[in-house]
Amino acid sequence: MRSRAPSRSRAGLAWWSLAVGLTALALFVGSTLYRDHQHLRNQELDRLRTQARVVGQTLERHLGAIDRELAVIAGSGSSVPNTSPLGRFTSLAPNFLDLMPSVSRLVLLDDQGVVRGSFGRDDSADFPLDQGFVPFVQMVPQTLYFSRDPAFLHRPIRVARTAFDPRSHSRWTLLAFLNREYFEGVLDSVRYRSDVQIGLLAGESPVFASLGASDPVSGKLVIEQPLSPLKFLADRELKVSATAHPEAVYALISSRLVDYLILFGALVALSFAFLTLVGRRERRLELREHENAERLRLAYEAAELGVWEYEVGENRMNWEASMFRLHGLAPDRYADSTQAWRSTLLPEDRPRAEAFIQTVSHGDQTLNTKLRFRTDEGEVRTFRTIAKGFPDRNGTCVRVVGIHQDITQSVQDQQKLKQLNLDLKQRSLEAEEASRSKSQFLANMSHEIRT
Image (cartoon, rainbow, N blue to C red):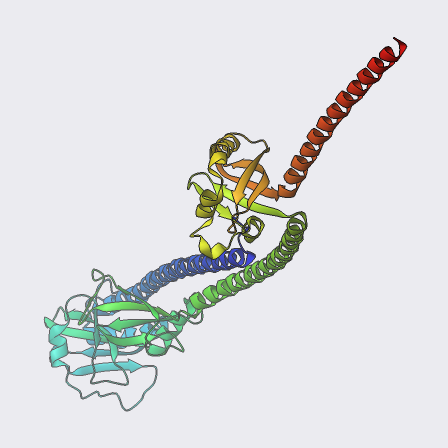
């Protein structure tokens, strides 16, 4: 007999389905967080590129202002064009320092690289006025030139421009040392966020950076953009660097992760609660089915009924234990229920049994018939067979379920009753015949006496 699938199997399937669903959900959340991280990281890099572009424009604007003022001192557009470079330097340098807070010291060199004049915001004695600048003077072109000389560690950043003396036809060089603190303040003022570090690099060496900046650390987001080489020359490539810690990106991702975890936890809790309730309901149904099956078994035993099932497609008969007991058969003597059915059914009833099965298989009504089987002891028993076919979704009958009721005693009683009726009828006929004979005899005797 086919029975209802155990609730434990269905519960296991439900839990496995939950595990697969939660795994798929976790993969989806992970991929979503990864895409969000990449999107936020790209947004942050775009902000850093914009920051680097703004810083580059700011530095170019300040360096351009220094170049214009140096050009005035060099004699281009000067109000005293016929004076010597030293005279212009002496008269204009103080005003230059007042106008250019970005410059800390202005130095004039002759064509031999000797310092001929120097003005600074501080008169520190450590400035090497006797230092030779011959190699440097030979490198300076006729435009703004940016240089970082390791020999002056305390003032390593400078820009220069060539000036010519029209009377002596000699070459002079204006050297401006940049004010590190000023430029660091400028960079700090254009930062879009306090944790962003921006600076100017000469090659791979830092020139100056925003206030509070530290050395680059692995894991940071870094953008480097070169300054325009068309506006001034330099002894090495100048690049603007914008660096940011990824904590902001991680904070947003962590916030979203917390939201996803809360949603995921709520979903898991609801799923566990739902499956727990379903499991309890399944266990109650299973217990109820077990109780109903037990009641039905007791009813079958009390009514001396046996249950069987015939699988149409497999041409196989399935008997419950009650069938073997009802038929007086030992289950271990037969390979299966089909063999027990075929070997114990009386040969003269086999055509009727097969016709009965075929009729039930092609309809949906309940039919009954009488069949005779032989027990292991050789006794012939008569059973009332009641069966019904069960079709699938396509309307094709796939199995037949029936019951057997032992009516041997009833058949025997009917046969005895029939025999008694026949005997009684025979005796009645005999009595009637005897009565007619007696009446005839008495009639004859009466006639003889009268005559």
